Amino acid sequence: MQSIGHYQQIIADYFAGHSFEKQPANLYAPIQYILSLGGKRMRPVLTLMSAEIFGTDCREALPAAVAVEVFHNFSLVHDDIMDEAPLRRGHETVHEKWDLNTGILSGDAMLILAYRYFEEYEPEVFRSLAKLFSKTALEVCEGQQWDVDFEQRDDVTQPEYLKMIEYKTAVLVAAAMKMGAIVAKTTQENCDLIYDFGLNLGIAFQLQDDYLDAFGDPATFGKQVGGDIIENKKTYLYLKALSQGDPYEKENLMHWFAEKPEDPSDKIVAVKNIFTHTGADAATRQAIEQFTLKAFATLEKMDIATEKKQLLRQFGENLMQRKV
Image 1 (cartoon, helix red, strand yellow):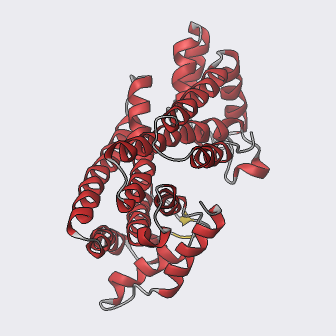
Image 2 (cartoon, one colour):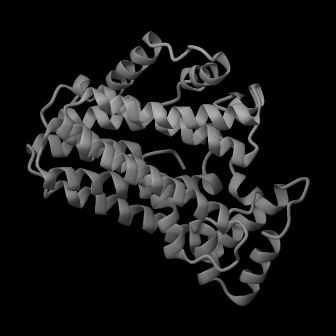
């Protein structure tokens, strides 16, 4: 297994050397634009990494990895429209740079383009990849819808929230890793285990993202701390605080989450204090650790060399060691 930077360079070289632009320009220029914005591209990296873990040259998994990245960016284009977001990775979002209809149609085209990359594989591998991809794409849509629905609900449960982040975020991480295993033609058991590894690590990562949004260091987190609190997002922290708080704390928390003050400074401080006093912060850290350990437990069952198991564990540990 190579370094993360090595895999990222392979992905970057592919996108630098392939143009998506053709006619009609207003359909394809936005696709070229969003894919050129880069980012960490961790999902396609996972596909390449997984292929090598199971004994295959990572470049054989490049078409599947590119499919994952194109699909991920399709979902971002449509998410930005739904969120009315002005910026993506510090640049104008597609619907802002062009218009709403262009964003919708270019996103649709990206979804179709993603499928076409699987055509580079032999029929049996193509079928397995396409079947997994269709299942995953539908689950991502379901997760997105749950996320939208939860904004209007006051009765969201912790299991419902965990299922939402599993579908919205973790299943694509899991599928990216399983695609590498499929390309490598490893056993079905290994394919299923690497999927479970990615799924649980993806859930842990999203829970950690929720935690860092409230308690992260602004200098290292990479985005505004307190953003979920400002937007009244019912995260795991919020749900834990509601379930563990006393009547006064619950009432106070619900009061703050019914407000969107012009200056949110006091709100952020007050809500973070509630998260701490109710033990929601500690409970969230515990959940992060549980899902991380659950991911690592799958490694013991994989039919791969011990050093490869250790490399996957090290990758997971590095992924979860973001600064708080």
